Image (tube, rainbow, N blue to C red):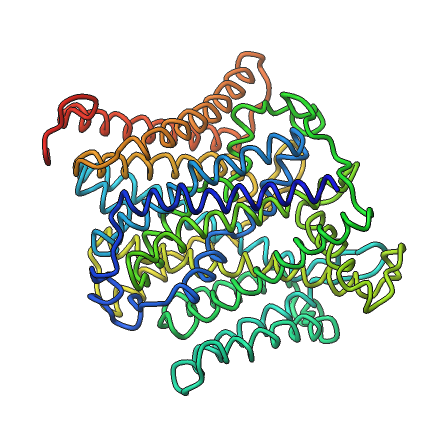
Length: 585
């Protein structure tokens, strides 16, 4: 019953937040349905294409989520207990992440669907704009590198599920079929008179069929190529190139809609499973609410402040959301009033998803395995209780065929998140390069997309590097820094939005205080990394080359954030942000 109370409290609080906080933001921004959005004024069928809320919300939700609302909450719970993770997810999603996403979308729409970087150029200066663009582009390329490797690894792994095999090749088959269905749905909607509701009624069940098909038709290429993971990596990059170039209606919109509704279904299974299992008395909260102000030494000994706020990203606040909101989403917003359900509502949906992910570890006394495995096992265990009248639920998971199928379903959910992020990141990185160099037309699209994917293609050739004697992929070496850089991106986006609001005489404090909090947490985490490096130097420890590279990147991020903060303070002084304000500076 405790688990049921946890879910109900989360749902009620988020629903009230949407109506109260989201409604207040919509009124403050004076959203209207009368003003044309860039999706209409710049409509070209490739990058600018209006989409109704029923289409844009699931697409936006599936793109912003990635693996963040699964991995982040579970890791944070392992480090500090489920209580601190839950409180930050709820409060962060409502008062920081939701505001960040909403203002990023509205600010972009009000400026011709330009990026947050363009707002920084207009309201701060060209130098800040260039720094921000460089930071954003490298962040996007890093995500492509990391998620390409993660997805390729998922396709080749031979994971054991309670003694039964649930191989990665089965997930590969299901994923390929899912992408093929997205292309087909886009073509059907464009070239036939089938209504969107009927198209969903046809293609969503086919997504479920693709999951079952994957089990019986696993796409195992290990007998064809010498290095299957690298082969899958290059296949994914080719897909990213195509996906970033084709019109929105052909892939991004139908794939996002299918992915979003698929994830709604996962949330429904998870939520109903929690309710049923709680009422049956099967599942109770077994993991501790709070484990301490520091993670155990075996887990790295991280302090709760600031690491909690760096570990939990997408479920509470993520800088990536500002790029997406001011990138693909702002170019598809049909009406200004849709910003509340799409941006603020989309963030709260992701917050709820993070709560359900958190529940998968709350029922385990001693979690074992990677976060995706913990999540898939939990969702499968919850969902099988819903179907207990249909099939016999066995206490032996290895003997429970329903559990194995649901586990496969949850793994495809994880892969779907990553897929949606991969192609969206490529398109967003293309936007950034085209904006930076002023490239236009098809030629600019080709060159920008090629340059974006060139680095991930080269990284695939780099052999694992040794850190502490253990071989690791190159991207994983910088994963800790990426957590800080992603949250730093949120702080910098909020900083740019604050300057915009201050210059136009609006409610700048709404974004200023979230900006201040995120800036403190990210700077704190970066300074901890600097301290660790300095302590190694003082004790005469051996410092590997990659550790020195990490330190250099860490210092660069600190320098960038301080520079942009100083630029913003200079602007604030000119317009008297804390006193009498000039109308437009």
